[in-house]
Image (cartoon, rainbow, N blue to C red; front, side, top):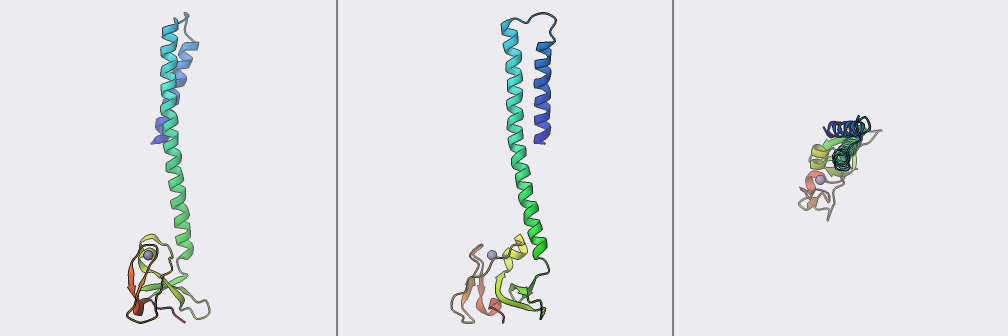
Length: 142
Ligand SMILES: [Zn+2]
């Protein structure tokens, strides 16, 4: 959409300037200024549209990068109780410290949980999204 606006604005600006150059008679100063101002306005609109377009492309690139990372993670983690764990290649089972279930399932990002005291009823939380878990459901796996 932004690209269409920019292209349209630049085309109008080019047409205005070409019209000045191709005029049969010399334009008076007021007409000339009016046409040039029209061209400048179109170019400013095109410039703003290109800035918006660049931002949209940057956002799209970031999303593509995030999805690539999510695809790379997929299959390397397994859900055990209430947390995801890296799969140990030799045993094929989850191992190590848990990752936040919410962050993985909603954003496809692995965020380590923050463990406090290792008591089964103690709370554990995700430093990224603040979701709380009970230690018994997310304790580190040997
Ligand atoms: Zn989280």
